[in-house]
Amino acid sequence: MNIGFLGLGTMGAPMARNLLKAGYSLRVWNRSRGPVDALAAEGATPTASPAQAALGVDVLIAMLADDDTSRTVLCDGGALHALTRGAIVVNMATVSLDFAREIRAQCETLGLRYLAAPVLGRVNVAEAGKLNVLVAGEASVIDTVQPLFDVLGQRTWRFGDTPEQANVVKLASNFMIASAIESMSEAAALAQGHGVASSDFLEMVTSTVFNTPAYTGYGGAISKQVFEPAGFKLALGAKDVRLALLAGEAANVPMPFASVLRDNHLDSLAHDEGQLDWAALSRVARRRAGLPRGQSKGNDEN
Figure 1 (spheres, rainbow, N blue to C red):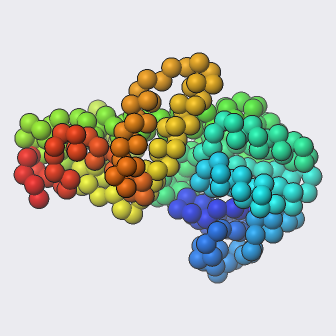
Figure 2: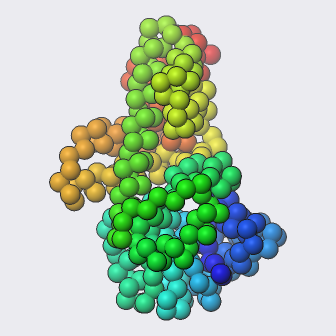
Figure 3: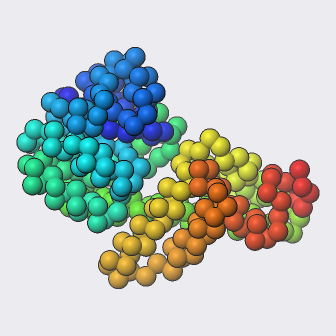
C-alpha cells in the first residue's frame, strides 16, 4: 500500500515515522522542509508539493492544523485532483463540521473515498503508536485502512457511516479536555489562595480521584507552570472550543460552559499565550486571583 502523508508537525511527523517503520512506502510533504528531509533520511520519498505527494498513492493521509490549512493544501494545493479515482483520503485533522462536509463532497465528486479519522493523544503517545483513532465513514473503506490505524494507534473507535460524525466526537472530546484544564486551574488557584501549594494540591488530585491522562498530563504542566515546548498549542485548543460551540449551535445543543471556555481562551490569546501549551490556560485563573505567574509554594512568589 502506497501512502501519501501531508503535514509533518508535532503530531504528523511521529505518525509518519511509525508508518515508515512498519514498512509502508511513504511520500511526504510539509510546508517547512526540515521534517521532510528528516523522514527522507529514514526512507520516505520527499515531495515538493501536496499534489506531488498524492501522485500514485492508494491512501492520502492529512494531518494539518485547521480548516484553512486543510483547504489550502488539499484543494488549492491540488492534492485531491492528483489522486486517482478510488483512492482513499483520510483526514486526521480536527476540523469544523462544515469543512468536513465540504471536503467529503469534493471527494465524492472526484470519485475518491473519504474518511474522517482524528486522533486522541499527545506527541509522546503518537511516538509510541498508542493514539486512539476516532473514525467514521464507509465500513469497507475503514476496513481497508485499518492496518494503518493499527500502526498509529492502540485502538480504533468507529462512530458511524458519515465522516463528520468522527469530527464531532473529536470536538466533544477536546471540549472535555479544555474543561479539565479550566477546572484544575480554578481549583489550584483556590487552594493557593488559602496558602496551600498548588503543586501539592494538583499532585494529590491527579494521583487519586482524577488519575487519568488528561488530568495527569496537563495537571503536571500547570503544577510546574512549564508550558514550553508546547505539546498542543493553546491557540489550537481555542479553535477547537470555538468549533464545538458552532457544532452545538448547528444541532440546537446549548453548551454554556463552552462559552466560558471560549472567553477564557480569548483572555489567554490577548496575553500572547497562543503558542504555549494548552495548559497555559491556567494563567487566566491565576491572573484573576492575583497570584504570581511562576511556580509557587503557598502564597510565596518564587
